[in-house]
Image (cartoon, rainbow, N blue to C red; front, side, top):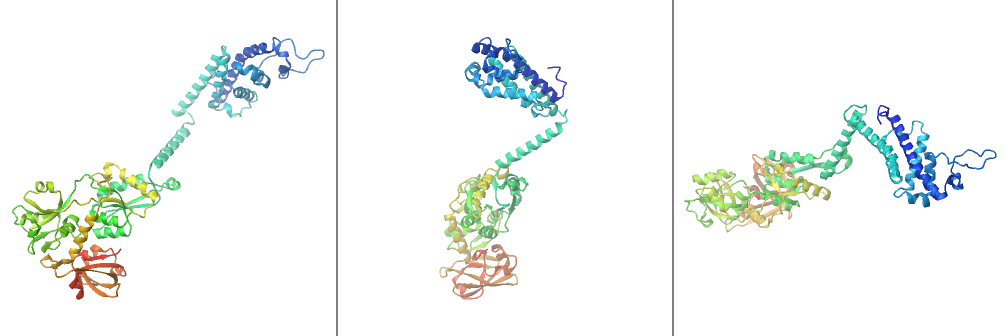
Length: 556
């Protein structure tokens, strides 16, 4: 093979196949002669069946057809004899086990292409096209036997070696095809990686996914936003092929009522509840829970506590002179549930305090008792000098939920993307959520409703707010629509018209109104449906002064 190595590719391939055909011819000739002699006798070449296949010239004058010597058996005649109808089935096929007539015909076709090669046959351009023919030659000669098998094996090995050399030259940049080759490899690899990534990613149909939370510390959710943007893909393949991305946005709310308004209007596709109050409202608005927030935290309750040396021994000791420190109006553990536990009692209340401020006021004596979230089994160990007066049943956890407006095709992939997010995205130091069953909010809903209703008994009289629900009065609920709304100094006057055509004037601090209603200008509130809670005797005089945001519920 060394004398061929320096030849150009096409010429080298042509010479290789010619040598292979010559070796095949020399290997087949004794086999064909032997088989035909056994079949037709020593003068087999004079048999009429053979004579019809011989390319002999016309008979000379005075000479018989045929002759006394066997004809020159070239490869074309050998393959023609083997594959002929008259000899293949009963003569040659039994002597060539494992060899099909199709293989013989393919070798005959190869010989004809070599004989008529004009330099344009693609067979002599690519070595890969010739290798199957050389493999067939090897199979035939293995059955036939003879020393030509080694010649074919050497030619095939040289062909494979030449292919490896060409590929190595291309791979090492030594060929003019190196750059196109590696460019194609890079393109195909990139395409395969992209396709693999697309097929393995969750697909959603909508272009934007909005994640809402009442938590104002939005920076902790940015890793989740970035993860989902990198993970989600458009469900339409052409959109993905054009490079379109799913826009994922994290949105917060200024207050819990604003978050609830977004939920009722179904503006958020995903809710990270953060608060059991907002989570409960989400379930009531039709959101579907898929997991829980704060999965590592133990159960917690609303705890009413005082100092160890306090004369208070239980809730029965609370009276109108008792000073109570609470959190903001929308806290489950520092307002709603404590107000439910305090129903029917009177006290002086300080609101909008943080947990640390509440504990400090109780320790310093500024407040007789306070409220916070905690586990009763560990409360006194974590808060030396304080004792528990009362605690609620365990509060339900907050949830992760999906909007009912999401289609089924979007809901399942979005759920998988959220719950399969890595720990760095949904761990305790980040978004802090995980899988879990939906909590039961029925008891909690009652406590919140009682806390809201009891808020109608608050009277904001300087220097403190008094809680007093007289047994001689009752809380009335009035429903209707806003006919008119206008500013009145730092307060807002609302004109309410009920379904039975009664009209009422309401007066509320603008700061309180902004906590419970989402609006740009006051006129945005006109025509909205609202519910108002107030003591019955307040409805007998106008305007009805509203002291807490829970006395007013305005539809989005």
